[in-house]
Amino acid sequence: MHPVLLRNNVKILGEGSQVIVFAHGFGCAQSSWKFITDAFLKDYKVILFDYVGSGDSDLSQYEQRKYATLEGYACDVIEIIEALNLKNIIFVGHSVSSMIGMIAALQMPEAFKKLVFIGPSPRYLNDHNYIGGFNANDIETIFEHIAHDYVAWSKQFAPMMIDSPSKPELADFLEECFEATDPSVALAFAMATFKADYRDKLKNLEVPSLTLQGTNDVIAPLSVAEFIHKNTPDNFLVVMKATGHFPHISEPEETIKEIKNFIEDLSSKSASDHRHTPENFAHH
Image 1 (cartoon, rainbow, N blue to C red):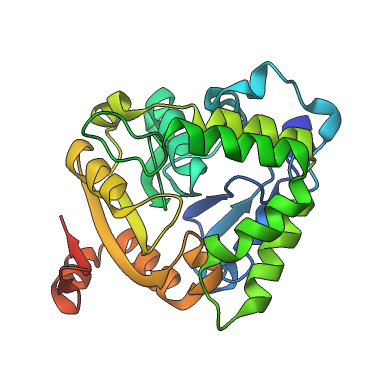
Image 2: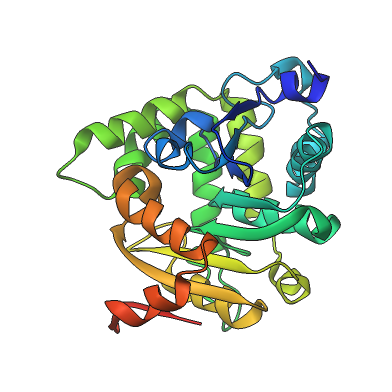
């Protein structure tokens, strides 16, 4: 097996020819997609992987300098694409992986057909008129909590991020995902994520993209999704009924439907049906 595929614990599933790559977010691994992947196996070829330092990746391949920025993670994505000789992929990135996917698509646009951003943010820090959702003190506090007691941080934040109080087992699942990540790797990934600013790169994206925004997302507020939509060519925005930052875990059916609408070119129909209220809308 190609060393890159071993390094990133790459799994290839499904019966179709169209490739979908699912890229997990901070503190998680490919297991975080388990509630939605089955819906794509019949018609698509599904690629799953773990970033180095996450899941069952090869931790010995972790390089602190490389993974100090999101470009290091994007390099892994490109190397997986090259190792499998993939073309015209649909890339589904959760949270920070939305921008990692964008970086990869800017570097290698010919490999990408469409991008799906779930809870994306090009900049988490508030900046003048830009509302990213966090001030500098908030972010420093997050770093301190992760560094001091990552398990306690996971217990506190998992329920807030899932935002599904009626399904406590989902918060437990997310907490287990977090706790499976090495705390030092988690801290470095958090720093690479929260210190990033890719707002000025959005305008250069040539690949059509979908922004899926959860209602009441404590990590990436609606203002961020609207900023991406306004500043990214050919970006489609759907505000979901799902609450929280992990709709692919909390509301898998809705997430599957919206991804399929977009990748199967049904998005115009989706936009015209049931989401035209101020708190729950879609537009192009």
